[in-house]
Each structure stands twice: as structure tokens, then as C-alpha cells.
Length: 302
Image 1: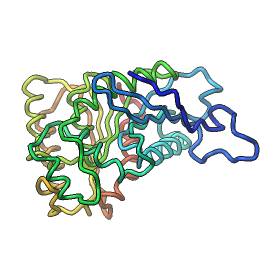
Image 2: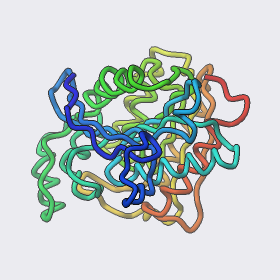
Image 3: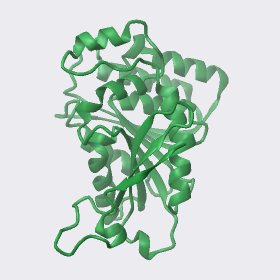
């Protein structure tokens, strides 16, 4: 793992070093660092948001990790902070996993399309290049296991060694392709996380490979010690046609929840919500808010 010597966006709240003539950034208490995967050498931009009062206390905090940080880190962080302000969830260290490509999710398409899905598909790069002609094509497909390895073996150890954290209550959030990644991680993180927010998961990918992965998992496991929240917007078009097949976001999630109901995994607690009047983009905020309140509900184990 390589840690960049350049650390940016230290806020006034975090270190008190902001010049008097300059106001602090609105997203205070945040730090950003570049980390490299010890397995692949790929570089990631990792942002860490600290809870209010972090430097005035000796408390250790649970960690909430979110992918797609280029576009969603601010929403994830401030939703968690506002819910904490209302005493609805505990204070959290929020960690955003993104890429050094600027603060817009759209520019990260080559990386996210490669890294969020768990399996490789022949001709994937060509298919995506034709589907998104205005964006650079992805580097390949099937990088989900490598991303999970980076988070579990590089990013989390870095955060744990530099901040006061605790292993209990650790959560992972993802939406769309990131939701597919979060579901894959639910079955493969080997205890790195105990709580999940899985929003609008792209279960259509690779002919619904998520269902085959879950079936293989169920053949070897009766337990799934985790707490998860699933969501989708009822305005997410059922007949949309992503390059690799029908989106069917709503019906695919219903099918997966029916599968999970039938499995009845020991130790697995989950809830879901199908949001009225929300589409694929607008469902992000409600999913984070309701999801955080569920996975950190009073008395939740793990």
C-alpha cells in the first residue's frame, strides 16, 4: 500500500489551520488521501469525514464506508451528521472510496464500471464504449473482488491506524452498480462489515449473476451475520435497457428479497423500502437516510 505524500482538504474544524480571511469549507472535518491497492497498484482517492467533537474526545467510532465518493460523499456524510444531530444514529467516521478524477460521478464511469461488478464479461469494453460514446470506455470488467480487497486490506487498515475507530458497527453503502458491489460484499466480506445499505442494486448485470452468486453462497453457508437495508424507487423504469440486458430494477429486487426470505439465513436481519415518486437518481438521498436509521437502530447487533 502506498500513501501519497499529498493530503488535501484539511478543514478548519479538523485542524484549525485555515487562514482567518478564508471561511472554512462547508463540508468540514474532512481529510483526503491517495492510497494504492497493495494487490493491483491502482490508486484511489479516499476521503474521511470525522464526527463533530472528534478532536475534543477520546471516543472510538464506528466506520461507514461509501463507494462512488466522487459524486455521493457529501450526501452520505451530511445525511449521517444530520441524523446524528437528531440523535437518530450514533456518531460515525464516514469514509468515501473514489478516484482522483474530480468531484463528479460522471467522470468516474471507466473505473466504476470496471470495479463494481463481480464477474468479467466478454466484449464488455466494446459494448460499454458503444453505449456511452461520450465517455472513455472501462478498463475491463469483473473488478469487484479487487475493489473489496482494497477496501478490506488497504483502506480500512489505513483508517483504523490513523483515526480512533472500532470494528463493531462497520457499514458499507452502495447505489446502482455500487449496490451490486455492496450485495457482493455482503456475501464475501468475511466480517469486514456487519451492516449494509444496498440501494437500487444493478442485479441485471451478467444475466442476473447476483442470483447465481447467492445460490453458491447458500450451498455453503447457513449463517449470514449482518444487517442490511435494500431500496429502489418505484419510478425506476422497468423496461429500461442497459447495454447488457433489461434493467428491471424493481422486479429484480423483489425477486432477490423473495430468495432471501426463503433462505432464512441465521443471524441475517434485513428490511426494504420501495420509494414512491423516486427515480434512479432521486432515490439516493431517501435510501441513505432510511437505510442509516435501520442499520443503526437502537439495539441492532453487530
